[in-house]
Image (cartoon, rainbow, N blue to C red; front, side, top):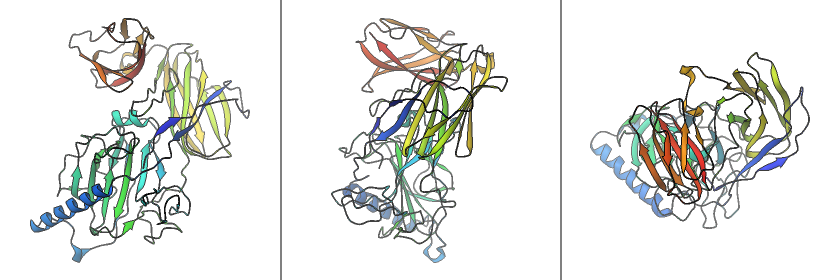
Length: 465
């Protein structure tokens, strides 16, 4: 179950341990998700899913369209990972795990995951978590709004049910709205549930259609009982739903003896999810308002650049090696940063002022893996111009905002802090949208999303004073 997000930001003294000079301060820390948990779907919703699936199976069998044949039942499938980043996402990885299946039938707070740990949850009502919760990191709402975290079929099979059209920006456990989901039966009769998907994102394939392993099923969302975008991946051995499957092999897996993964990932899987550059610190807004990443890969000479690294399963006693590399491949800075605590999710930021034109690199090495992010300082060639170089001024503003962009901005939308749209504009002239009069808006915080002719988009935080 994904849980409500807040941000614990820590301003801490820089820890020495560098091989050359280094920026003077680090900012960031642990990204905490509220640990209140609830059932992913109510008993009534779960029973309704059982009923729908079994009715669909009967209909498919009656029409000779059911792929599963009990007489030809094979071995259980071996799953690939069900979450992948979209092709246009330049992160290293876009997922992290918040919860595994609970193997302890007692409740509440009687927890045992497959590895004999407690990375799972139960509830006072007697619910024990029945799936693996995988969420997007970093920027969960931004990832959902921009279709960055794709859900794919972990194994080939037949779609035997799907549900779409439900609200997908849930932030608490009080909703009674069902989730959006796809249900796939495999050749051995086992059934995988892919829940909490984004409204309107599900595959166009319908009940009875076959899907290949790795085929697109939908976008990670927050539909149903949820407090943020994530995938609930749940597996049953057959349509009787009397035996749950935990796809992970481990000493405390009481459900099945072997792994259901092609390549089982470690229990804790520390890694760099992204190394990025920004014009300002990312803004993590209250659920369900989209984060403002302030991402940019284009800067002027001597601009202050914000260098970030986003980690999952940060390992205590480990360290980051960090380099800001000039266009001639020499170091502006080369230093190490020690990590003293375990954090399920964390982010860290440093600042520098690149003063040479050309292509720079932000390089992060963690536990033997090196991630390199490139950015440009100075004038871009025409073919390198993107919406990331677009800016809005003045900000804060009084009445009129001006959009400074080397590419044509065809559309914009402005929403308030509650997520309500207060303005939508579309401009078909050759110049596009250059200025907008917002004198009628009340003072406060807004978010404007710009759309270019090339189907790029960028969200900027605006303050009216």
